[in-house]
Image (cartoon, rainbow, N blue to C red; front, side, top):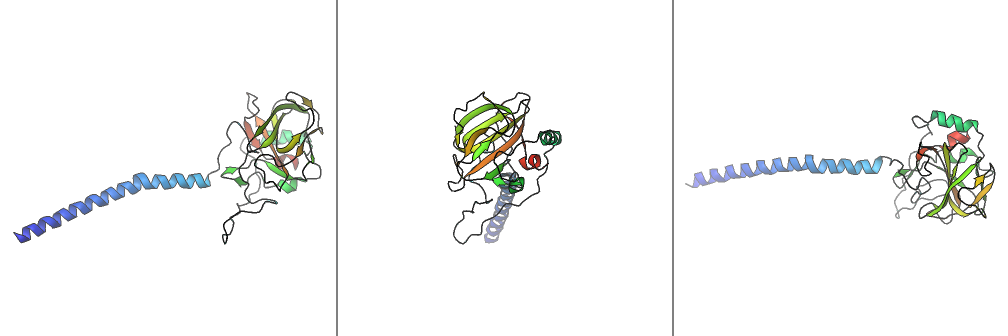
Length: 240
């Protein structure tokens, strides 16, 4: 009788062990593994641009020119890997077209080399997709070519921002973190290449001790909406 009871307990323990093992294996495969995969993807995959506010609306900048990394004491800051700029798929013709236009740099005495790799840097988990041009506060910002002021507005991230369309409404130029606009500037106004349209500042989420212009170029979609387009590396345009 005692041996029969021991045998029953042994069988029961084996059954319970098998059940627990199968349940644990199912939990790891069906719950834990997908969760880890999603977490890793969120931490390593660049976020595609969304409609609405664009590149200048970055969050706290990652370590870059003039911006020290902010980390806990004793922790070595992680600097994003630098990559050689490349032309996004399908944008070769757009880059060539802009190169033929001899665009003016929006800020004087800021060479393209200074923002060579800024476009591909990560800012709070998303691609920067713009060039940061450091200059003293109040430095004039010029229109890079003839065009029309498509939108003026203030955003929490980009601060005083400005969208300019080119004459053909094929491209848009985005200027952010402005200290202020040029006097009398308004939406729908036509501007000429070289006109002063604003001044360098730190509005929005720009570091308060690092005045700079966040400048982006993008190819508009057929709908010609000021917020909607494919980003183009400014370095590739100005270095041609």
